[in-house]
Image 1 (cartoon, rainbow, N blue to C red):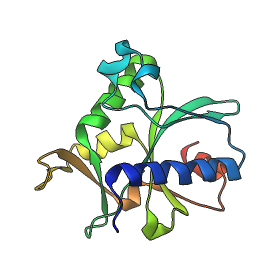
Image 2: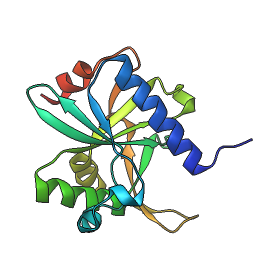
Image 3: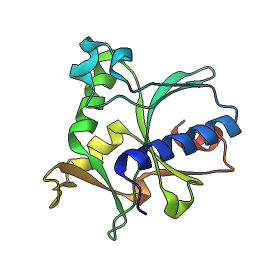
Length: 162
């Protein structure tokens, strides 16, 4: 039996949380129910990120853990509207928002990380429309992501961005 998109989302969040716990990375899981979400923030979010990861000596980043499979063109589809709203959040509040993508094809043991700012930069030339949902998305080539394996710590990600 195939999982629903909601079930896939919950699974990827659980697996990402397991990776964070395994490497003793401090975080806050951001509950997704309406009561925990300020109405004033709605103009900055299409949906809210899933985690706030605390980075020693740097501060924190928001992470949206998403279930995504690369297309046969070796790109990940990333929602255009969501990325634009995350970008507004970044600029308005001086916060970093990243995507961390995985799926069962990778056994949730490889995470593909990319900052929203890079998605928008690459997306200028890679915008598409889904034939099924009619939603706009950016087709981001897989080689633009930082791959972090289950056994890697957050230092692998940080070494690529610092």
